[in-house]
Length: 469
Ligand SMILES: Cc1cc2nc3c(=O)[nH]c(=O)nc-3n(C[C@H](O)[C@H](O)[C@H](O)COP(=O)(O)OP(=O)(O)OC[C@H]3O[C@@H](n4cnc5c(N)ncnc54)[C@H](O)[C@@H]3O)c2cc1C
Image: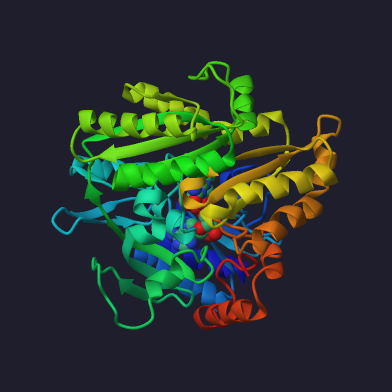
């Protein structure tokens, strides 16, 4: 039966685009962090919506599970198949065309397999900005960004991927094509199907095309790094920046001193731009629609006020694009530096911004009490209430032994997140990694409503089974 299925797939997309040998499949089977390798019957590489629809019709007929895959940069094991070898991976990477740009409507229509970086560049060639920005932008796809409702570094000003999408085309689990490619800012005509598919991690259908929102390009961008004496002071600085910089404030990142030290240790070419040592640093980005001079003036006067009030103890403004990139590199190298230090237990958590200092204090204390000497690498998008709060082994313990404590560490961190009405997944999704964990924190009713939606849109449970729910 499988050979009949595969032969039919080959008739639709050509034999060369049905990968069945292990070496051909290798790049699609293992997750980005190389923690998990699944098995697949085949990797399918269609080039059009019609081909995706024909393939999903076949999957429904032969009862073959389907794992949608974009750039395979997801961090929660959502884009890789399980170990059974029964599923196919449907990779969107050959569906990578920008279909239209409507400058007056400030929209762009793109196929789901377009790399995020290429979407940004295409917007730029029309003097527009597509503001979604992630460190994985050279590898991740817009379909994956929407399926995970990706966040990134400019959420504070422009919102998550959900806010940046006006319309979708989706192939349903039964192989029908829903054309919702509307470039409308207002459309109150019933349940919002677009919002159902966004963030569904490929469990309801396959996003094949999207209408994205574009914005005017700012005339100037400016980055600054400020040393702050505490997480409370970082919050005060954020409040000051919001009121003094207004909508120009685009990003506000928190970096703990320990995180920065790891970057400096493992990437010696990156230098710390401030002499002083502080428990935390904040990286601020503004985008200005007047001029560079105006941006400089705004940032400098805000930082002067922050220094005067003690919200910051030292600060530096980038004076060139390359300096600005260097400041961002300090932030973007934290995950890699921590990985070079050893395995660690990661958390991508969301909290009311006002509760973040209290959360850090109580959770640090609880972790140190339970695992004396453990090391917390705390950084993230403070302006969005999103922390990456990763815990490494005490120096006296092997990282592989510490990883065995994942459940206990998760309880300490996630119970406190839940206690503050936060979320255990801010921007990465649930995938396979947090599928069980979420059942501890969502109400029975919420989970049951989610299962009803899944059952209605994918009655045979063929779309990315075992993920999210
Ligand atoms: C270095 C690095 C930095 C990162 N930084 C961030 C960050 O700042 N913010 C953030 O949010 N994430 C971040 N990520 C995570 C990741 O890049 C995002 O989740 C991204 O949106 C995934 O896109 P992708 O194309 O790689 O999707 P994949 O990893 O291929 O898939 C992710 C999920 O989406 C589903 N999917 C993929 N394409 C489709 C489709 N067309 N239709 C339906 N379902 C689909 C998959 O089945 C899977 O469940 C980072 C990852 C790395 C490696």
